[in-house]
Length: 457
Image 1 (cartoon, rainbow, N blue to C red):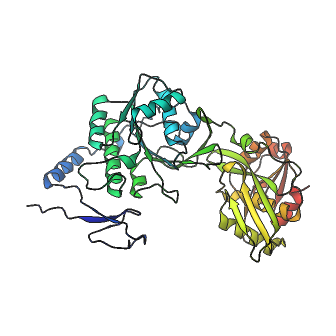
Image 2 (tube, rainbow, N blue to C red):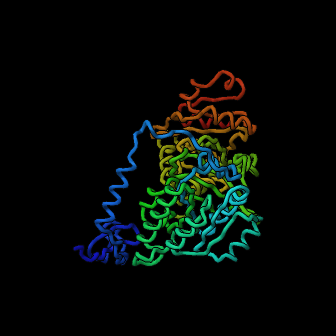
Image 3 (cartoon, rainbow, N blue to C red):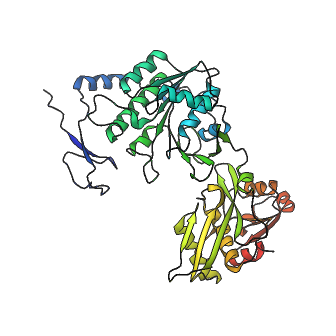
């Protein structure tokens, strides 16, 4: 005879589970985060049924069809690019981002094109049907194939999906969903995990693509257990600064495409608009004949993007110099400053140092090192960098300029936007085509001192 289910204690911050209560979570170290939960009951009969169904579903690999199914195009090119070419049938996609960044807006906008031929069910646990209607009117989304359900009960939602049989489902958001059998509040670790599992099995069994919206915590990570990201097929992050109108859609996980692609949007009164040429947008309004600025070229998937790097070095009024950066890793900036002092003789002692990537773009790629160093040195020496010059390359601790990938694509993008000189790593110069070498003034450099001498000419 099966005994009663014992309660377990789950950390609301990291998902750590224990059979006893702790005042301080042993895994993440947070205080008073252990909440009591009762696990779902399971029986031997259901386990046997699962075993039999698993045995029946076994297939030979050579017998499985490998035909590539056509993807659903949303009509938003930037969104389709990040997904890898469109929505895959039966996929489960998680879209997360800061509050007010535009998650619900972009999902409602993709319904405009999809609802021309497909039936879409929009399930909201945060807004009423009237609120969704008002937002749809502002975005000019009108269709008889768009259905709205304001509901948080997972059981009711599953039955509705099975009865209506839509072609796509949007759930906004997963933190509001509730399973009656789980004795915890909405948004808890157990509720989020179990709800996502149910929607995952529903998407795979019915072949319906499901989008779920997820909240983020104060650190910018997806709220809830880390296993949530492992369950879904695709994880999308919607990034952007509140002070900027630009938004970047980035893929952190994608079982059906590349994880390096990004989509760029601009938030307007009528919704999100695609930015087809991000480089031109990032460089608009660039100052001329001003020290402390240099253009970088970073690769986002298969797309090269040019961004303006601005540095400001000024005498400090305090005993300890102040250093700040926006859009670039703070520790890496300090490392580059140390290399400039040790290997090139550019001293920043007693100087406040500020670094900014214009447009709210964040540069994660090491290829931006050279542009950052050039902007800082330009401001330190108050010497203007040639406005038609561009630099990229990774800087090592010995002050050397190391090779980067996709060099030809970066140079071609710079040439298309009117740049006439490219400062590149010496080891990349050997592999360039003759046509590219003759069409653009390419200067190969070995170290940071020679790079600055070349870029200011």
